[in-house]
Length: 136
Image 1 (cartoon, helix red, strand yellow):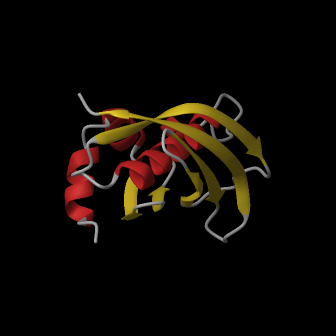
Image 2: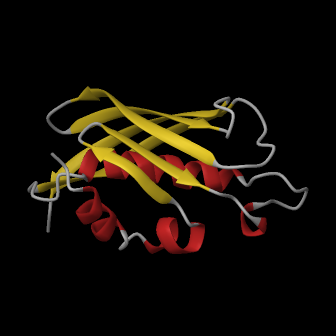
């Protein structure tokens, strides 16, 4: 069983996701996580849409939490490759990302991350390959 508060405390070290962007960890377990964000003006592009980097940061963070929430593990997994597919425009309100493991190998893993709007509509589908390495 993962201690959610301990995971949140550990991932406070990811200053860009937690402080600069404002992403919140809602759920963390090995192979699955949920993160959320209430976008504001700092998340918008020049035409008032949500910056693509917001989706990427949320997906990458959700992946990191799901894959690295076992704080006692002697390995750490980092992003190796990402494919992002935008499905619909965001029109306000909270965004939620769910990361789910598809394949967990000895040295690589594959995750599917989905971003949803406040009404549960798909905003983006992100596929992330991770590479496992020994903690330093």
